[in-house]
Length: 458
Image 1: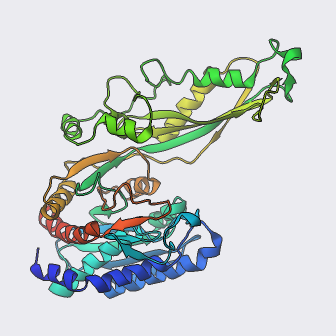
Image 2 (image 1 turned 45 degrees about the horizontal axis):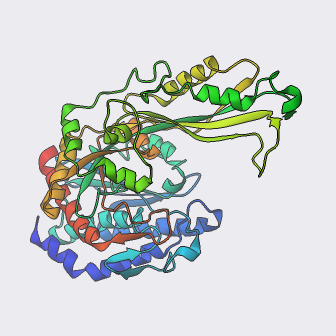
Image 3 (image 1 turned 135 degrees about the vertical axis):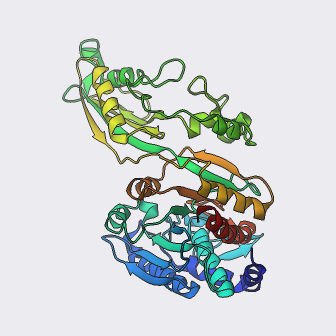
C-alpha cells in the first residue's frame, strides 16, 4: 500500500478521532420517536462526512421511516464497483445508571473509545469513510469504484430498506457488497463471516374449555391445553437431537470438506461454550460438531411457553388456553415460507383431540452464504493478513441479519462481512466501546482491501 496513505492516517489520527466523537455524540436512537430529529441530524452529518471524503452524488433519501444516505465515486474505469453498507442508528441506552460515562459523551480510556454506537456501527462506518478519504487525498483516485448506502433503521429491523433497495437497484448496482457490522473471533484474530442463518417463527395457541376449570370436577374428562401443547412440542425432536418435521432437512446444503477443515483449525473448543453458558454439557444434533451445529445446521427452538396459573403457591385448575413461541434458524437453500408450512402441518398432525389450535406467524428472513473461496472473500482475507500478520479465520454466524438476506435476494451479489469489533465490546449494552487498535488496523485493512480487490476482480 502507498506509504502516503499510512502517513495521512497517522498525521490526521487525532483530528479523525475528534470527528468520530462528534458522530458518536448525536443521539441517533431509531427505536424511540422522541429522537426522530436526532436521527435525521445524524443522516445529514453522515452525508457531510461523505462529501468531505471526496464522495460524489451524495444525497439523503427520505423513506417512510428514517433516511438512507448515499454517495459514490465512479471514476475507476474498468475496475470493480463496491457497495459499502452500514447504519448510523444506535440502540437505546437503558439502563443508564450502568454506564461509567454518558453514552453520548464519547470518552477514550484504556485504548478504547466508549460511547453508544462506537462498535455498532458508527465506528466501522466512519472507518470506511476515512479510508476513502485517505486514499483520495493522497493519490487523487480510488483503486475501485465505491458506493455507500448508510441507513438509519438497522436497529429496528430495517423495515423500509427493502423497498428502497427494490426501487433503486440501478443506483445500488455493484460487483460486491462489503459490510463491517460483525466481530472478529478475538483480539488480534481477524475474521470474515461468509454466511448467516435465516429465521422464521410462529406462536402456537392451544384453546380448550371456555374458561379455566376446577381440576377436581373436570380433571380426567377434558383435555388440558398445557398437556396437549407439551405433547405437540415433544414431537419436534428425536433422541438424537434431529428435527422430526417431515421435509425439514430436504434442501439443507452439506458442508464442504474445505469448510470442515477450516472449522477444525479454529482455536475454539467445546469447553469455551460450556464455561460461557454455565451448562454442565453441550447437546445437539448427533453427528455434528458444536461449530457445525451453531453455524451450518438448522434448528427448531421453543423460546417461551405460557399457560395456567403463574402465581405463588398452587391453583388447581385446568387452564383454558396455553401457547408456545417457536423459532427456526435456517441454512442455505431452506426457504422460510416453506419451512413454516411444514411446521404448521406437523403441529396440526400432532395436536391431540379435545383442543383447537391456531398459529400466529412472526417475521422471517432468508439465510445467506457467499462461498468462502470466492475471490472477493479471499482478497479480504489477504488484506487482513497483511495488516494483522496472522492468518484470517473464515466463519459462519449462527444468528440472522435480515438486511443481509435482502441484499442477497434483491441484488444477488457476493457479500463480504469484514468485522473489526470484538465480541466483548458491549454493543447493545451499557459501556459499549471500540478498541482503537482495531480502529487503526481496520483503516489500513480497508485501504489494503480496495487495492487487493482491484487486482483480483478487474
